Image (tube, rainbow, N blue to C red; front, side, top):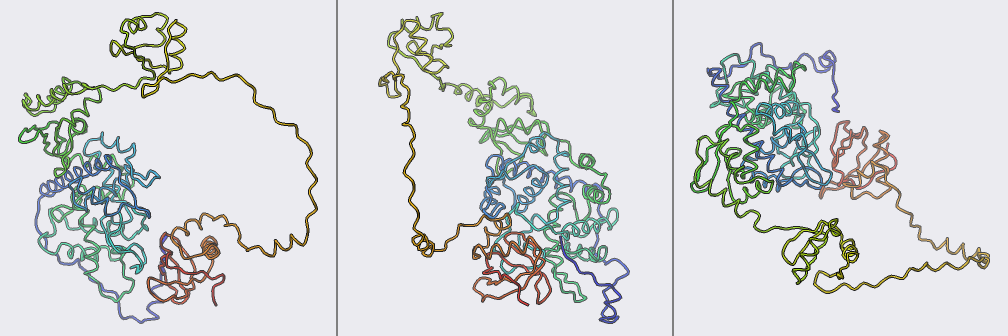
Length: 590
C-alpha cells in the first residue's frame, strides 16, 4: 500500500503564498490531428489483434514444448527470454507482453519447482475462437498494476534504487504493484477517446509527446507511472520524462490493437468501458472482438517446394490449429501462419493411433483444394509404411526353447490358459504374469522349466529353511550406576565452549535470511521482530563499496530483496537492499 501525504490547499497557500500557482490552461492542447475513417481504424486494429493472437499462440506453444525455468530470485531471465524469442520468432516486447498477460489471465502458473507451466485454463483457451482468446488477454493487460514491457531496472515505487542490479527486469518477476501504471493506462484511453470521431493523432509527428500533452490536460492528476515518478514538483512539466514513461505503454496498446492509426480502436473503447462499467465482462468484450476480428480460417494451403508446408491466412480456428499442431510443426519465423509437415511430425500423429487413411482424410478436410499434392500423399503413405516395423513389448515373463514342438504344446495347453501366453516366434512365448507365477504353473502342469538371468545364465534356486528367529536373552537388572563426582561435573560445565543450538527461524526470519547474508542470527531476529511488531530500529548499511552508515528507520515494509522504511533523519521513504545491511541494533539510537 502506498503512503501519500496530503496537504490542505489552505495550509499550502498560507505557507508559500499565492505564488507559484500550478499551471492551468482552459483549453485542450493543440495537437496535430489527421482525418481517418472508422473502417481504417478497425482494419488496423484487426490486423494488430490478429498478429498479437498469432504471437500469443506461438509463444505459449513454445512454453508448452519446453517450460521456462525461473531464476533463483524469481522471474524468467534474459537467457530463457532469448530462447523463447528465437523459438517463437516474435519480438522481445511481444514475448514479454504475452507472458505477462497469459500469467495474469491464469494460462501460465508457477509449478513450485522453479518452472512455468501451462494450466488447464490454457487447454480451454486453445479451444476458443479468436475473439474468445483475445478477450482474457486484453482484460488482463487492462487491469495490470505495472507495465509489462518496461525493462528498466527501476523496480521500486519509491524512485530509483541505486542498489538494484543492472540488466533488464525479469519477466513474471514479483513486482511492487503500482497504481500509477494503471491510472496512466486509464488516462491514455481517456485521452485517445477525447480526440473525437474520425480524428487521430498524426503518427508521423511526435506521437508520444502529443499523448503526453493530452494526458496532462485531461487527467492532470494521472501519474506518469509511479515506478519512475519524480517527487520534486517545480511547477513545470518534465515532458521528456512523461514521454519515456508512456513509450512502453503506447507500444503495448498498439500491439494489442487498442490504439490504431493514432486513435482509439473499438477494442480500446470496449476496454475503456470496462473500467467504468464493471458489468462488462469477458463475454461482452469477446463479442466486441468478434465484430473486429476477421472470421477464423478453416482451410490451409499446402505447398511442396522445397518442403511440404501448410500455410494459413489470418488467424486459425481452434479445430484447424489443433489438427495442424498434431500433424505438423509450427514454423519459427512465421508465428501461427506456417506449419512444416515432416516424417517426424506424421509419426507423432501415427503414434496416437491414426492410420494413413485417417490422416489423408483429415488433410483433405482442411485443404483449400479438392486434391492434395502428390508429394504430400506420398509422404503420409511412406511414414505410415515405416511406422511400426519395429515393435517393443514389455512382458512380465518370457519363455523360450529350441524345441518348437514343446513351445507349441505349452501355448496350446488348456491348463496354462490363465497365463495368457502369447506366441512371438516359434521358439518364444510371453506372459503378462510374474516369473514366479509362470514357473509354478508350468511345474504344476508337469513341465520342468528353469529360471534364467538376463545374461542367459541359470538362476539357482536354494530353498530357504523355515526357521523361527532366535529369541532374545531374558533381561536382567544391570549394575547400579555410580554416584557422579560433583567436582568432575563442575569442570565439564566450566570447560563448555558455549555453543548454542541454532534457534528455529520464524517465517519472517526465513524470508530475511535468503538475502540478508551479513546478518548473524541475533541481528536477523531483531530485524524480524521490528518488522513483525512495527517497531523502530537502527541498521548499519553499506551499499557496495561505500562506507557503513547508520539509519534509524520505522514503518518497515518488506519486499525481498528490498526493505522499504521511513528514515528518522529525513522522514522520507528509503529503499535498502537486504544484502547490504551489516547489523541491526537492539535499540534505535535517540
